[in-house]
Image (cartoon, rainbow, N blue to C red; front, side, top):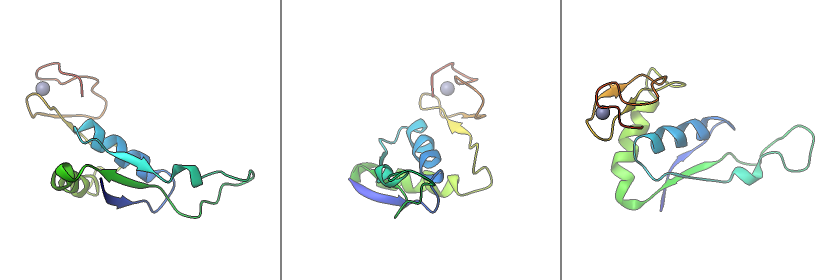
Length: 100
Ligand SMILES: [Zn+2]
């Protein structure tokens, strides 16, 4: 596994992880246990990081560059079966009905 992303806020890494997973990357979130410990207002010492298998690093970095683009919060997802782009609200591919 190799680290490809370090969060800058507590929520971003979760969105990035979901975005990668929806595109077929076996992304793993680490460091989430640091959030919210001790009660009160959670002040994490560090934000979560995202790790991916070495073999998927290139693809993950490409996806990451897309994620940092215009549609940050609700990125489109790409169908793994036919490669069509789908709006984030689509539960299955508009073209071939495959699950994301
Ligand atoms: Zn499709």
